[in-house]
Every structure is written in structure tokens, then in C-alpha cells.
Image (tube, rainbow over all chains, first blue to last red; front, side, top):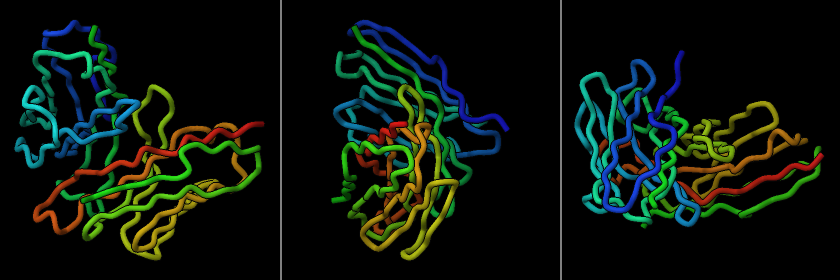
Length: 115
Length: 115
């Protein structure tokens, strides 16, 4: 069974640009969550989607947005990039929309570097 | 406020030297506590989910336990390949008021096992 895939794996952008990251969950999984990981802050929750609906959003500025498609694939977008957006962006896939009795599996991440 | 604290921040063991990692949490109405292993530059790898106080789960040299306020990851006779960062992540509690897969991550314990 294929795992969670994320594309691209590495990305270099300059300040002010925008970027779109993609996540394909495990087949049959309907929930996708996004996290930002930095050395100083660790893993921080960005947002989660279930059946194309954003259910929950973390404490990030509006420059961070996302969406989920009918096939459960998800994208996140960061506009007007800042140096501090350099991080590993991870998505997690799960079968249902509820953490109870519901394992969550992470993809390999997208390493974003903002110059 | 939901909080997670992992200790120690770093741990160096000799091969075969058993030890335990601690995860203390404050989450209203815990729905589940996840343990992950993360290797440098990779996404977290799912290890265990615990759902109720007193529950224990084992996988090879690892055993995870859960109380109402803490979880422990016991490592028995570790090998160098067990070297990684171990992350714990309680799921948001029932007081949140809705279904969610949001996880609140601790900063992790960096484990180094020397041969």
C-alpha cells in the first residue's frame, strides 16, 4: 500500500514569491492535516481538511492557505514568502475525521528554503 | 492551555542500556496519544497510539505506557538503529467541541545509541 506522498520534496524560493505544496494521502484516507516543522518551534499545526472542508486552523497568518480536492488530495499555498517560512512542511493522512482510534501517517515532507 | 513537555531533551545511551522517555501533557479530555519516531530530514514515522490510562503497547524494543497525565516510552536493550528523535503528540480533547485530527506535538527527545 503506497504511503503519503508530497511534492515537491525540495523547493527554493525568494522573499515575496508564493509557493504551492501538494499532498496525496494514502488511498482511501479522507483526512489531511498540515504541519510546519522548524528547529525552534518544532511541529506546529497549520490546518486540517476532511471531505474537502477545512475544519480547524492553527495560529498562522492568512498568507497560509489550503484546500482539499474531491479525491482527498490536498494543497497548501503560502503567499508573499518571508525568510521565517523556511521549514519542513509535513502532511498527515488519516482514514477518518476523528483522532479517536484513528492512526495518522506522515509524508516525507517538503523542505522549503526562502532566500 | 494545551501543553506537551518531553524529557529529557537529549539522551545518549550505550547499546544495550535500557531507559525511558517521558511525555507530560495537559490536554482537556484526551482522545489519544501518539508516539512517532523521526529521522533527520524525514517525516515522522508512526509508532503507537494509546487511548486510555493503563494502556500499554509494544513493538520490538519499544513499549509505550499511558497515565492520566503522562506517557512513557521505554526502550529495552537499544541498538544504534534506534537513534532518532522521538515525538509524542496528544490529540485535542473532547472539550474542543468537534471532531478533529489535530495533534499537539512536544519538542521531542533526541536519542543517540552508541555501539
